[in-house]
Length: 55
Image (cartoon, rainbow, N blue to C red):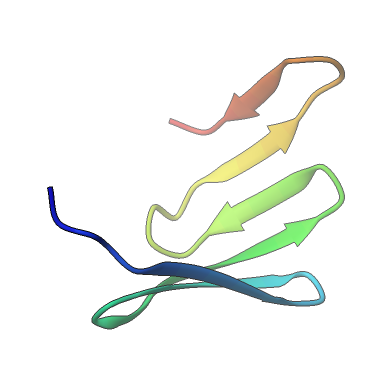
């Protein structure tokens, strides 16, 4: 099982995800709503253990 490098850096509402080969994706997170550049999907954190994600 190889060791993998992953790192997440944030600058305000912007989140950047890095792997060994460079930047893998970035996202935008404003309150309970978030969007990911790789999947192009929205998600919303709902009260309690619930959440919603776009298909």
